[in-house]
Length: 326
Image (tube, rainbow, N blue to C red):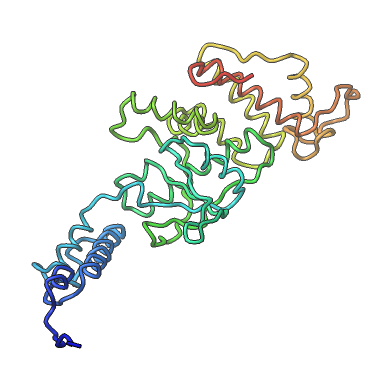
């Protein structure tokens, strides 16, 4: 039996799988992994707001320097960011499996790819992340969009289980937590988005749920933004009365009035105003005792149904091209 002599000289096949990088010989796979890691290091430094001249890790002219500089100067992509959510995973499951969604609020997850089985981990990102590298801006956009999404949950279901942020990652790296800023205005339409593209996003969202349509419109329509902001907290009589006043004012500004049954509105306002009926949640405080209140009391659940029905009527009239609530 003839034994092939041992040699340290790589074969042609071996040479095709190895490269030299900055004077170090390594497998191609290792070189690619190293280049990607250095590239992401450059992106991370840029996200901190530092200047490129602050880096001292690589000498100019080396592959490491080129990769780091390329990462520092490269735009970030929407797909590179992921916001992991924690909350009602059943609600997110419905959106993730809907088959169509909008990049305004793209939801995915519910699958453990490693074990090939379902799980309850869900994520979202948004087209507002496209090209961004500032972690502060990413956090504030997340707070705003998730807040709007949670408001739509409350709008359609009293005391619904809301979502919160577990972590935000750029690729596989978590970014540091930032406190929520006090934002009082809509985000606005993404720059360079055409009206045709905007309508396409709304059409895609309408195939899934009116909640996603509300999310998109709330980013630039101040009346919808204001309405949903009132639904961001726990339901209460005082909040519901403010919503009614706000929507009536907005309707007058647009030249119409919201149709509502007089008896239903009277019952609603009687409850919302009356300390003796709803206690400290009433719009008014303790008043001198007057005539007995003969109006039938309304539960908070009924109050929620009344005010959301009132808002739906407003939306039907203000945005008939998007809503047709019954």
